[in-house]
Length: 317
Image (cartoon, rainbow, N blue to C red):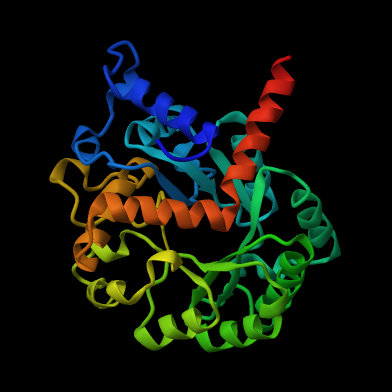
């Protein structure tokens, strides 16, 4: 198997936990067998998993094990404010193959002040934190005013430039202004991904022209509102595409009946990848390998994984 030793270790763990399923482990027995029938043929990276959400409070251990069983070997846990970012770091310290982002979501931008800025800067000293975000602009709901959102986003653009870490971006009904702000900083930024992309062709090419990455979710599985993505997905360069569940949100609508009505989780990422591969007219395994390679480069996962294993070894010695 190609790849760094830390990834081999995760894949070996996944294979070991895949079969047989322990009858004594009640949580893992509820293993979503229909989903695991579509276990990814190659390791996957879920670049956006909201595992600090309350819905994962009781069975997170089983969620992580199901992800590994489905060959989703790496999870980027999204930190949308100070509390959730700190919780994401704690999860990354607890589980091999989990990493964190840290930022302030535009919904919470009104809370941005000097104290929060200092806390974010401190969080980005942690080796578990691989990206700045989730941050950006959301002019759809305006839970924070546009001015507050722009102020917080501008500060986080500066943090990304200062730290050298990529951006994990949120945008809704704010594409032109987000691109305008990004363009002013683009030469100073390492990289950026537009998380959960659902917009139109013009917006897509606006982001690609800025050399950004695109994150796709189970939105493409929704026949009611994912039609335009099914048409656009062929136009995203393979080295710019990454995949995510955005769990517990955006449960794929076309899942088997037994899985409908459940919370979304990382074990379902292979289902999403299969759907994306179908609409791209590409091989599922090839797409899985390509998106993982892109995520490894974007988040510098080889370095992060080695640092994670070294830190654990030092704690155990």
